[in-house]
Amino acid sequence: MKTTEFLVRGAARIPSPCCGKDMSIIGTRKRKSKERSGETKLYSIRRLSCDNCSKIHHELPDLLVPYKRYSSECIELVLSNPSTHDIPADESTLYRWFDWFNSLIDYWIGCLISIMLRTNQENIPLNWTSANSETALHKIGRFVGDAPRWLERFVRPIVNLNLWIHTRSAFLSS
Image (cartoon, rainbow, N blue to C red):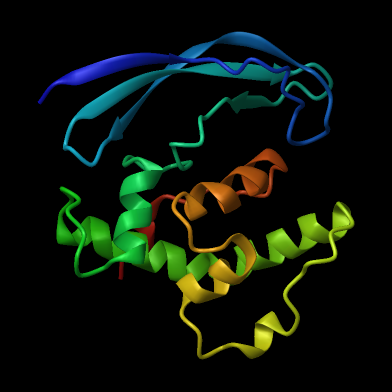
């Protein structure tokens, strides 16, 4: 399969997710991503070190989800359309994506509410916890909508505030 390489570099100065201070570029690392077409893309991701606390962070573009090897578009299509997607992934991978998404949905919603409260947003959906019969997709949709790129819309703020939980989906399998 063909592999294409890209250099990922943000134009703006990025504050540290853990303390908000400036970060310095200390190098790059390679990150692969499988696309909807089956093509593998290789990204050179910048490694950044916080000037204050020295923690290392990686500058991921929106099209990547931390610790996932498929593009966010692929994962979103499978989660949105479980029976009608055309993503080239095996059944065990699809199972892990659903398990990962469903097991962390309440945590992510809590993170989004926290972010909305921190930024004084007033459009927090009321009684979101009372909707237990809703699917995980409907629950998150109340916060980020269901238009394309909904996965990116909730991943980015959670990652940028250092609230993303380090997961390895292989450990989520039963």
